[in-house]
Amino acid sequence: MTAREKFTELRRVLTPALGASEAEAAARILMEDLAGFDRKKLFADGDRTLLDFIEDKLDAATKRILDGEPVQYAVGSARFCGLDLGVSPAVLIPRPETEGLVDLVTDRLAGRRDLRGLDVCTGSGCIAVALARALPFSEIKACDISDEALALARANGKRLAPGVEFFKADALRLPVQASGSYDFIVSNPPYVLPSEKAGMDARVLDHEPALALFVPEDSPLLFYEAIADYALKALRQGGMLFFEINQAEGGAMRKMLADKGFDRSSIEILKDFTGRDRYAIARR
Image 1 (tube, helix red, strand yellow):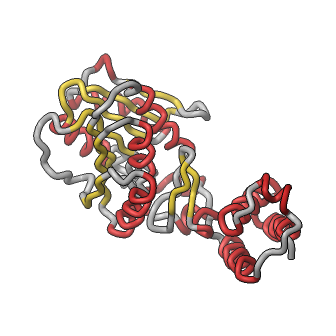
Image 2: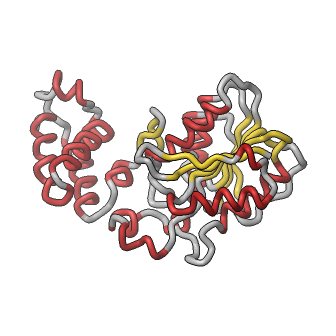
Image 3: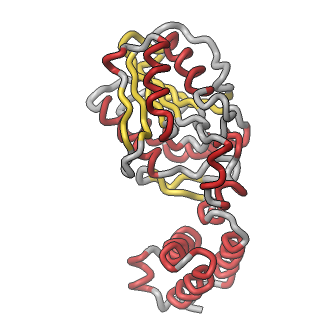
């Protein structure tokens, strides 16, 4: 079968499960990531016959998608800030909202060099790796509680940003640091409430790690409070804290950060590309 014929077949097979638009996007990801045919190559060399083992890889990944698995897990990679990151069911699939968090950090720290930063709840390492590439000569550390996530993050770091240092730590009990250890701390911690499950895609609920998604219903700011307490000790004076947040918690986040003792005039709750409250910034 030629590459173009295979693309057409994948799109047809996936459409009943995903819908036409998402099926086409998934078929393109499959062809590019597993067969090496991006959009341009598919147009220029689409008549080339695929090797049997490539077709087998495409068929196996397609079956996983039809069984309900996200396409990124099926191919083992996800695009984030222009990078191809390895992913697995041990980590969340990086999302556009989190790209916005990276953009926010780099925008606020633009032109600065030799920064020291920490990414808490790093997962795939997407934030730490993207920041290490965007902030010249910076020292970036990143932590997670999951051994499986750290193994994947280290692999991503080794390939894309070898200078990032990954270590195991519980975000609720971060190791004591000397005052002024960091110029910035960034985190996209668990923030989804159990009551929000009803509105979530089954592919997320069934396959992405609950440990990285959910917080107790009665403690929506559980991780933020712990990280904020840590940041007050570990940030240098004037250092910055960046969070991705639950869209429903903007007001509570502002109050919490102010009550903790962050500079009230520096606290910002910012919206994502959909117009929802999604980011919090504070300065020590």
